[in-house]
Amino acid sequence: MNEKRLRLAVLLSGGGRTMVNLHEHIREQHLNAQIDIVISSRADVAGVERAKQCGLPIILIERKKLSSADFQAEITEAVQSVDLVCMAGFLSLWHIPENFLGRVMNIHPALLPAFGGQGMFGHRVHEAVIAAGKKVSGCTVHFCDNEYDHGPIVLQRKVDVSTDDTVETLAGKVFEQECIAYPEAVRLFCEQRIRLADGRVDILPE
Image (cartoon, rainbow, N blue to C red; front, side, top):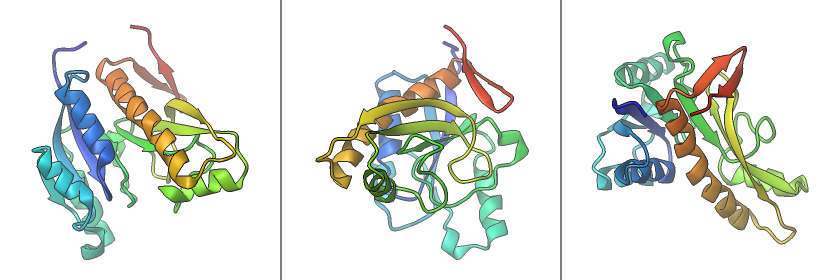
């Protein structure tokens, strides 16, 4: 592992559990990284308070208070000094500058490309999976491009969908896998073991 600590920005719009999970992996020295900044697009969400409780620097860049151009510009300016941007339940579309392509990750609570796209987040995803009668679901970590839930897939983890699963129980099972998958993807990035080529990700051996 490189000695240099990976500098992260975390973008959120909700509860902040994914941010806390990354913070805990760093605190327990499972990730050679540091969260330099947390950005919330909403002021009244639990993620803001959770970031403060974790002692993480947080700023508000509220979509509803800014023009589209100012919203994009403020995020881009705020993340300039980091190595990797981690979307963590960020519900606004940030137009990723060219120099950040391959440096922005997202985690989605389904096996993309299925059950993704604008409006597909949180319990809506699990409702759709159950309604479709799927036997398997899971989570996907991917590099972001400028479409919702689109871009090269880094890794996926699967869960079985039982006939008696509810939206809540399925969400719980998927989140358990998210807590494994996202830190693992960040670790691979930190160790420079991710190679992007022709829109695909190759994981290099240790």
